[in-house]
Length: 212
Image (cartoon, rainbow, N blue to C red):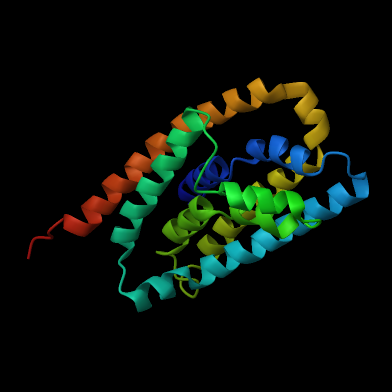
């Protein structure tokens, strides 16, 4: 019963990549008071949680209304996660998270919790796709325990993200940019393999002809 939730936790943790929040949050809040940093971190996690819960509850019905099968979305989600994995392995700044214009805007904003921290860095396209892939097949009325366990895994990753942001400055001094990049690359390798498995599962679901 815990195998799938554990696998989801690993995938979701790698996609959100809380370690990458260390240099991001440290840079966006450099020179600010501890109270401001704490307030931005807590608010960002709450906003991201709200976005992710909404996708967990309404993602599958939305796909059904749009006529998109879970197999098709699994293929797209796998490709998207694979691109994220490549960016992590080669330590490139993720264009799927934020653009240069968005980065410039974030530097001008006093409140950085909603944008860019909550979205697109925590609850970005990769995280939303992962939530849809895993919560989509789960019917909350028939599988409430599975739904709650997956939701607990989301909460655990968000809790780790909050800790990373609250401890961003000391962790940045401890790990340095090189340490953060090395950890990100290792997680990228794991995500790449999982992304390929998503594509394989999606192709199998889309094209496998059941015997009549």
